[in-house]
Length: 451
Ligand code: CTP
Image (cartoon, rainbow, N blue to C red; front, side, top):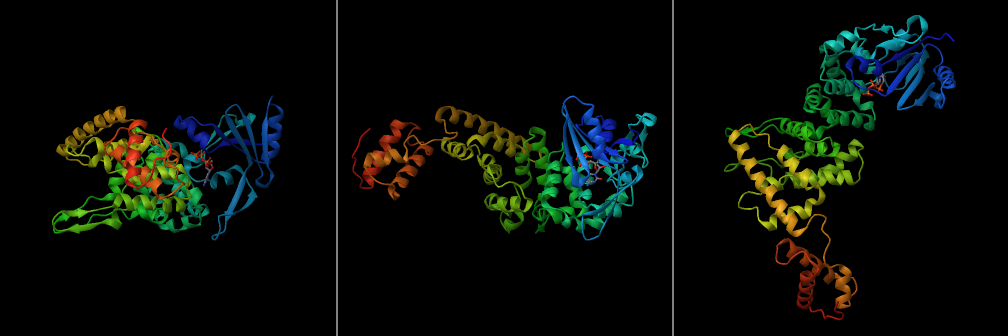
């Protein structure tokens, strides 16, 4: 068989970047499916999937995924992302790729085995850390507008610069992003959030004008207002700094999302008070309520991850609001009760939220934090409030007073919870049971069964 075949794209790029990669793309000047079938015959235990409609085939072996595709020449219509595909040469195939660093190929045939094909100086761009389109950027970006986000994502992931012409084309073509599905956009956004220093990607998103289109709520945080000589901080730069801070400590996508949106409601809640200056009262509550809408728009899952983000946004001021005078057992108990197992993440977020440059302020915060952490540990050990389960249940209440589910059961249950949180009674069955009897009596209930 003498059909020309080449390793192309990300795998070749990653060899030169010394990044591990498990996906290999092979371009065949001919039929990709036929080539995959022939290769599979030579392997002991081939797992081959053929996608006839796309003219591609995937071979899995060890941890590798090898995709075979015929070289293509594509042209796009301006109103759609669906290309008109024709068979083409290797050159046609490389021309239609997104960036010079991804338009590299390595020969696999006897006559050119291991030979690098670098028609657009991709290696030089890797060396100089530049993201650049192989063709006129207007063409490359309008062929597939997602590439504008990919450019920013690669720049953020690899710590590269976007070439000026390519960046200007992103600014010019930004509106075209609206033809791309939300899922694909969010995929790229998540990849940016997961980079080592995500603020770099978000600055590019803002400066290109893409942020305004794909995440308007976040773009709104940008700006500083001054009234009577008093200004507030720029909440966009603050938020991405908090995201950077948290990213140094955690690889959890959802904690990173929380950092990004923790102040999302600041524009809506902003007020200027002559005495106190700028206030953002209630921004944590309003922000927490905005999370489901943002998740819906971004096509992110509406599951416990969303609830986690909502909860942490709602609670993000609580640890820092505990000052020396207010770090009472009862305040800490309430915080533990509400944060549950996410208390460590909440504390991490609070620390990340300190972006002040004032050393005095930082020192004061840190000192206070140590105290908060110590107190939390003490209360935890004493009261066991994390993942709290009521020591007296609704069933216990109904059985004791021989009543059906009713208003009084709820009243007694919350009275027990409040008494425990306030430290009036201990977090144990005995004290809670006694308290329940008293509360029932107050409500005019008669004890029918004693346990
Ligand atoms: N590609 C492209 N335009 C796109 C997506 C992909 O030109 N919108 C090309 C690029 O040559 C890319 C290759 O297809 O290298 C494989 O794409 P993909 O697997 O999405 O990206 P990788 O470059 O492998 O990088 P990553 O896995 O980080 O997404």
